[in-house]
Length: 287
Image (cartoon, rainbow, N blue to C red):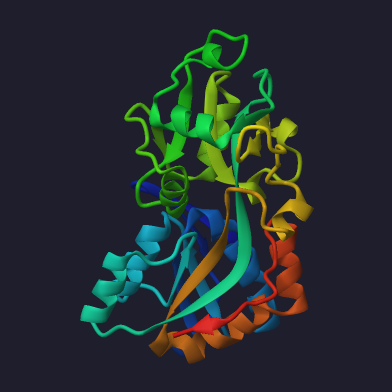
């Protein structure tokens, strides 16, 4: 099945276009850039098995996907964060019922240029870097470079996740990129850069991408842990790991159910793991 890329203002839409004779089997999925490549591959394999379905997928951030649900422009919102209290209130005011699917676990990786002489960083220091309290690598290593931060827009679930975990406000100097791929390209071209991406985007071979994945030390004196360490993720001891969500309109649930069932099949689970994500054993739906 062909995957078509369309550049739009502010974000990239990845659309999976499949002919369909029954409009009731057309699913619209929007949201998290962290999940978008995985969603495309899941949809591709699903529609190979059941060509009666068509699935249109776009990224743009978790906030955009959730807003699309509120506006009736999507059946599924992919999100790398839970609903905020304000979003819950908005759905309640509109009497829009949702079902929540937690289908995988993600780890956020912090990346620097492959030649930068640093291998690990503490959570405390990372917070100081991203908030702009540490502005030069010379404060940490033997390299006199100003630090350039590559991050996401405020609509990104990953942006919100990092901000909350570190209890910081991001530096005003941070560059706001449209997605994981753009952050990787930015850091790859910038010896002084640091950015954050879904671990699935760097799981294969970070060095070949021109970047290095930092190990994270939660507290001074503790073991440094990599987001690419399967055992650590399964033990839930990596500081920056989180569930991935799919919010589904309750009125669309019966239409969407076959796709959700495919995600949980052996084929779907293998695709999720092949993308560098982790399977939860306690997946469940909640209204």
